[in-house]
Length: 498
Ligand SMILES: Cc1cc2nc3c(=O)[nH]c(=O)nc-3n(C[C@H](O)[C@H](O)[C@H](O)COP(=O)(O)OP(=O)(O)OC[C@H]3O[C@@H](n4cnc5c(N)ncnc54)[C@H](O)[C@@H]3O)c2cc1C
Image 1: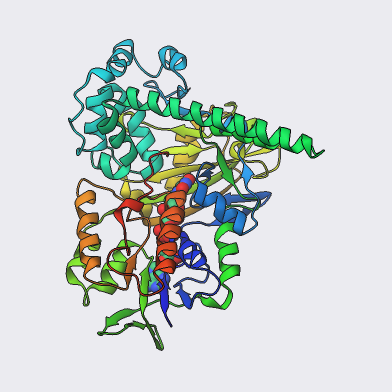
Image 2: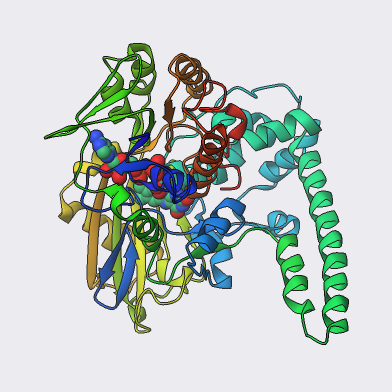
């Protein structure tokens, strides 16, 4: 066997698919289903996501993959563009989405707004390698960090902005400041680029329309709406039946080249090949792609590559608990007209935030109900992953119920709890140096590649992009990946758009 991929999460599956149908390759997955953290479960009147809720629709590699798999995306409802954050009094308030909404927003004091608006005058070079909190405290001030950044970070990373590296989490944002001097200048430059792209798209659409009408067909409309879409920010997408359709479709394409229920127990290496120890037998491979969580990689590499193993073992990850809960529509007064509501840690609540699942995409439950998902745990309260069901449901009924104006005594009429221990890697201050050290160690181990959400981006879009680019490089290399292109740093697709 030429290539063995270990782990059929999205990173391993997207890699294997992109190597092409003819590749001499096999994917080994410990569990009985493919998809890793991407999971969808049935509910009495629809379905619910247990891991990722939705993807941003602006990722070219994801869109290309969906096309290849002939999966039609399910666009989010327009109202899902709106996000809520709890204000200092614990009331959900819309997150401002433009400058005038920012000036009117009750989420920040005037002092906080003025401090944020002075961002272009802050020193360019300070805190670039600090924590997300340090970096943004310097640029936009303490209040924005406490009231907006802190809840957003718990929504993306289940993390604490004081512990996460700005450069590792948001490389494009840090680069924007390095390049343009400030976030304001960088955003203005991006706006100019978008307008130029839109003008080019409109000109192209006009060309296509006149070409189409010359040919007697009505062809311009989709091109001009594509140009319109390109000028707006990203929206969200899911799939009919849920996001699990994506790993299922990848698994179907792989067919017998995917082996489920096949945990890898150990690895050995001699001068020529990798030996992959399974429970009952063993395989050999020229190329090995590890697409497993960091602690599993650390264990498998402990004997062969101790320093690489230590780097992987040094990475911590956040526990996350997802509680899906369905209510009678009439029992919640809040209109739920948005993506969800995030909770700043300063309020001392026991949950991180709640997704309004049935408002994000259609078909999640019947009209007389609403389906929500509350996320708990993270860096703030990791111990909740071991809390009894009754405690978690009590938080949902009372803490979440109160902020969504639940009728007195009302409770969810259905719920589903999913515990994800060590699910989201913590991109801490060591992460940039750690990734360099991992790259350096891999350079000494040709034929070994490491993919997954502990490398360069935790979002499904980032993972798909990194895996596909790596696979294309390996395929083009027409041989065991050399040290130069096994894990190129320049291929990072961080979570900067998150
Ligand atoms: C609650 C939650 C919400 C999220 N929300 C979003 C979101 O809205 N949008 C977004 O983009 N991302 C979101 N994410 C993040 C995203 O889902 C993950 O980062 C991504 O799915 C991880 O993919 P992966 O392939 O790196 O790892 P995994 O999905 O963890 O896959 C690793 C695979 O390796 C297998 N494995 C482990 N050990 C072995 C072994 N010894 N032998 C063989 N196989 C093994 C595992 O069984 C697993 O299938 C969310 C994550 C969680 C937990």
